Amino acid sequence: MIVNAINRAFETADERKWEKTYWALDIHDTILKPNWKSHQIPTDFYPCSKEALRLLSQREDVVLFLYTCSHPRDTDQYIELFKSYNIHIDYVNENPEIVNDDLGYYDKKPYFNVIIDDKAGFDPIIEWPMILQWLQDFQN
Ligand SMILES: [Mg+2]
Image 1: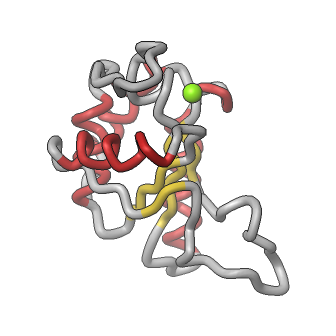
Image 2: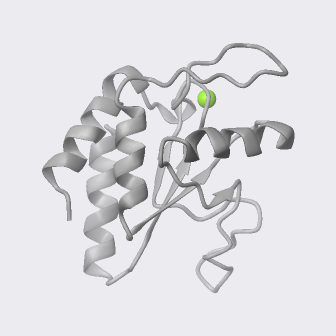
Image 3: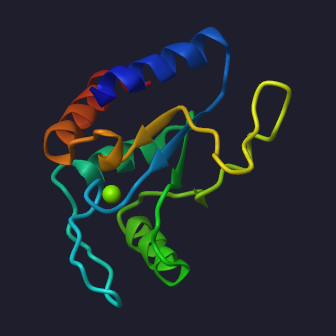
């Protein structure tokens, strides 16, 4: 369950005194219901996704970046769409804040603490409401 992963990320951040956690976000079948059109982005959010992402955007210990196969022509539109709901995305398919070191090589797989992606097993119908509830219960 994603809330377990979220819990773990914040606990680890706490233990190791990390100021931030990094969240990789897929879009289709994860935040938005796909519309299968090539020149019109979908705008239909899964229930609770907007609210949860807005709360995450407000947290100073959370950095959100898109992890998506969307065309570059569309990613700006997604970022604008999310911004219109006060959801702030910092990067697309990269996390320049964490650079290569002895322990990790991030040129081809950006560093993240949490991944929200239907292809990683995330169920948007069940799990967005759980994330929202978790955030409301454990707000800083
Ligand atoms: Mg997807």
